[in-house]
Length: 278
Ligand code: PTJ
Image 1 (cartoon, rainbow, N blue to C red):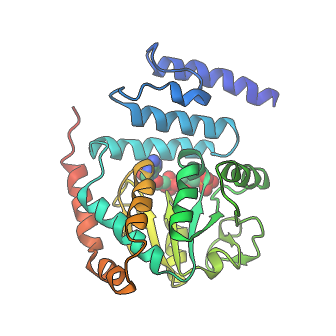
Image 2 (cartoon, rainbow, N blue to C red):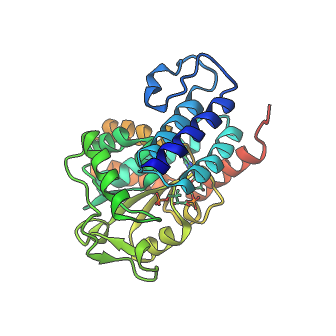
């Protein structure tokens, strides 16, 4: 803890520099409600605060900070907005989840930091299980993330039993619950490493990927790639799921069949390549 306290001190100094001394932006990531909602970069500041806090409380890995930086660059080029094709993907994702026998939402350290309550809302709206599945797995992080999700209203969090394995992956990354991801027919895998996304697909599971990089391997192999910031994408899937709650299976299947994954990836890549750096 002594070391952590030292790191905290350094992080705060760096963060203060990064904020450019803006007196409106709080230095303490615990106080995100103090970020002014009319700030032109509100969403980006909120994301940074949540990730920073995730590292401070031991749920997000330091690599997660780098992953977030990469995502933020793509989001900047997308104008920090949900493309129409990403909205269509979110609607197809909601239809898949509602049609599924056993949907599961996979949660890593970045997802837990950025959208804990929103994941719980989506699980409720879609009837999905929540399972923690980490790239850099430790018992401490698994427990901290499960606790964090429970604090945000999750009644059950899977992933701790780890009594199943994803074939073809090295040991730690392969661990899943037999009655969770092991048994799922539809899995939401946000901000995922490409290898694991590919291996889950090879198990015959329908994969819904949320990733701001349309060229990433996970987005490329997904049945439904949602190229959007997870901060916007998860509440958007929940909104579609609520709207579709009374839809017939036939209507849901039509939404799934009409979704064009290639067109969604192409539109996202085009938007990023033509993105405005102003
Ligand atoms: O918590 P762990 O141990 O499971 O580790 C999680 C990370 C994210 C560190 C790990 O899975 C990893 O290294 O992922 P990658 O390979 O860096 O991939 C992360 C992807 O998520 C990249 O393509 C980023 O562009 C994308 N991304 C980052 N932030 C966001 C995002 N996509 C959507 N919304 C974001 N906020």
